[in-house]
Length: 127
Image (cartoon, rainbow, N blue to C red):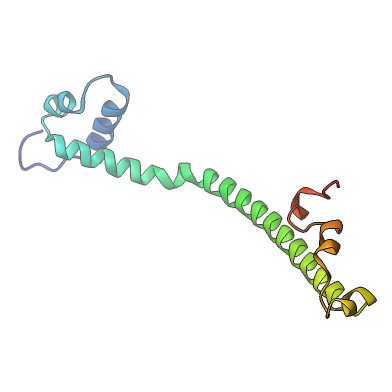
């Protein structure tokens, strides 16, 4: 390609195809086509950027679907733990002979023998 002439779109596509499919280096292809290495690199980058959204679309859709599913599971786990905490708080607020005898709080011995909260997400703990 002589200096000062604009390359045709067909020439650009062919240069990009050669750079992508032939086993030659970009420098060799640029010298053979009489264009600058930076020009060939820019054309390759533009081609890659133009193709990327088309190829990435299915991956983005799958990733979005996976993240939404994971988000739903996390919300369910959070709600279960919230409801469990509220239920325990309601139980503790009930005045029973045990809570009245301890000044309104249950003794530590009660909590050791009740269902522990720390393993709620992993199922009931065997005692």
